[in-house]
Image (cartoon, rainbow over all chains, first blue to last red; front, side):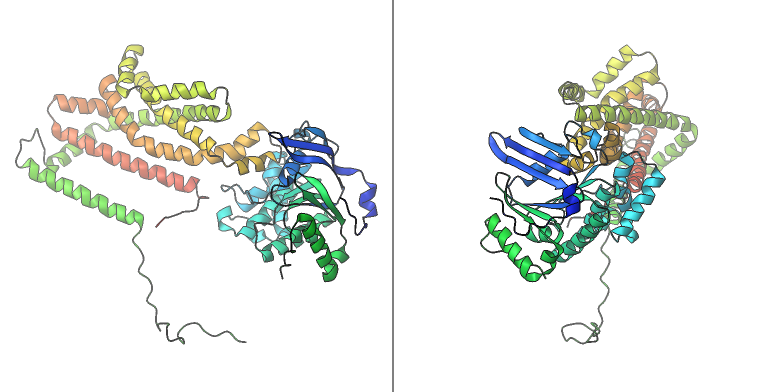
Length: 268
Length: 275
């Protein structure tokens, strides 16, 4: 069942061709369907949250978009390309921020951020300058020379986000990027990411099981059932985010679609 | 509200807290233990040497004298042994690294190479020494060959294990940037296996010293092994003991040197201690 409660969609994003498109995608593992006839369009500059419980197939969808999995049927297009068949063709166009920071322990914060740039063939100097500027944007300029084990969980996740954004990708995939952090750090990081994503018009696909992550960041929330199929689609506005009553209503609606009896309390 | 000082107002809190006594570091404990063991052995040696003939157990003083003698007369032999050891360990490291990488990254070739390496580990060092005497005329080639066939499997297997232990999360992370094979090698695999290279070198160095001396004894007229052979055939047990002490010290020095290099190279690794 698809319900539109807001129907507000940015005219600008609607006018552009979708940057990420999944069309009637099916995927099964050992005969067990994990993705069921799923169709998703993510417009240029749009932030879409895929919300679902554990086992809903969210990560499979992300891997299909990433190109590390192929659909059994249907098509996946990222920036107009098949992400699996054109794996190298999407170099620099797609970046991922994972649930855990996945920093290389032998590289300092700045060296981790410049990793993607070096893979893209940028010169050492150019990569270093860009990495430092991204560390500044995520408020970690002072920690540039620190190794991963010298940083807190929140700082490491900021470095991870900076690493994904430093390659200036067209599309950013966020795989539960904020769910390992405490509520305060998570909220601060979500706000920072949202600001940066808006500033640089990034197309983002956020995979999460936390309603607050989706409400804080997404232009559109797609609630997935298991196997992955859309149970509920909500378009969000700034007003929905800021108005406590509207936000509460949305939270309850999402919780109901997820099959939760009570919506989780909003962190203060 | 202004914050209160947390120093001495609460009754349960002592007014002056003595600084905790610094715990003895592991290294200090090890040094003390080593000195104690060496001293005990020297005392035992001295006592024993008073009751048995010189050719059975020389006194520490006689060994020290022989040590001074060989230090001035046989320096070139020490350098020959060290050069052989360095060349063979470096070559084995390189070849073992290549073998380990191929085993880790080429699943089709892996079973064949792994079998080859495992068979090699089962061949006694003595067999390789005797075979080398038949196969090669040049003593340098013999010793190099013997050391390489003995040491390479250690590097190959440890590096293969290192690649197998690579966190999948890091592989997925780097793959998300769509790197070339060279990028994966340079930014992920090589840095990841460096600790395994150090671990293997530290484990193998003592064994390599024993093997190079053994190989020199069998296959060469120069080097520490050949000098020990000469000392034995001329009944200079004091020199045999002096060379033995030298080899023990050499092993300790090399271990310390490798650990120092490791500390610099792996400065990113946090020091962890378990109670």
